[in-house]
Amino acid sequence: MNFIFALVIPLLMMFMVYVAPVILILFAIIYIIRLKSIDITCKILIITIIILCVLILFITLIHIEPDKPSELYTKMKKINDSQSIIGLSKEQVEELLGKPVKTHKSDSIYLYNAGYIFKEVNWRRHFSLWAKTYYYVFSVNFDETDKVESTLMEESLELCVP
Image (cartoon, rainbow, N blue to C red; front, side, top):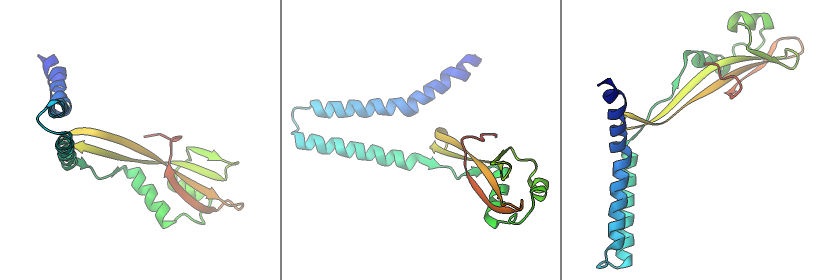
């Protein structure tokens, strides 16, 4: 019984939501094309109207969720936007942010995990059509006196540490 609830019912729901409407629309279009009593101009017009109605229906049923940033992302974004660590020494930065995940160019750039943003597009708020997590890195650039010169926050494929 658990098998039915765990696998079969969700598959039936997916079929009803995604596959069945597409099959019905395709059959309607094929039926219209095969009708001999309607000239080609009317067939094209009817098919265009059907496709437009389906697109409008699809667009109205899509829900784009607001971005969901992690707490770490929010904290690092605030530090980056305010530029509050400009002029701090390496020791002060390590006290505030902890040890860096990586360093570059003989310790003149510290890299920190800056969290993530989760983005999602849903169909009628129930079925996820598309979901993606964007990971970010926060880099702290030091000048020759080991003071923070600049900061940068950008999307990263290298530091995917959730």
